[in-house]
Length: 115
Image (cartoon, rainbow, N blue to C red; front, side, top):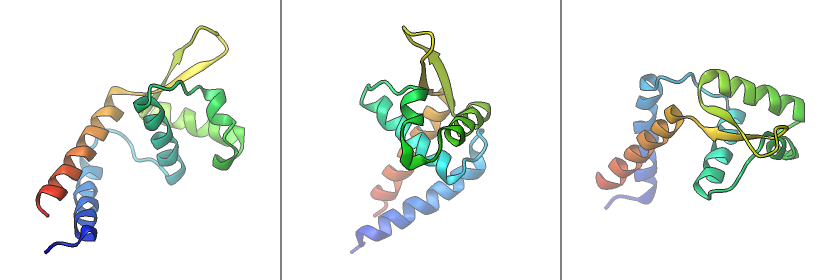
């Protein structure tokens, strides 16, 4: 019988192979947390603006978050879209980031299926 931990460890092994295949540059741990927040907001159909993100003090200073968002835009993970208020920009996942999440999901399904 396979332990649940075996499935997770197999998933991690499969995702390691993705790191070399993705067309996007890698993210540092804070950028990965930011990406997860953006993805969860998107999944829940919630608006997440740059200002909303910078208000999250647990992620660091507003200046640091602004620099990370800029880096993530340059790397191709997120984009900024206009809102009704020209001063506010909505953070969105790029198509490449969505494809990356599709690949991660396929790894999870494969790990669970082989368990």
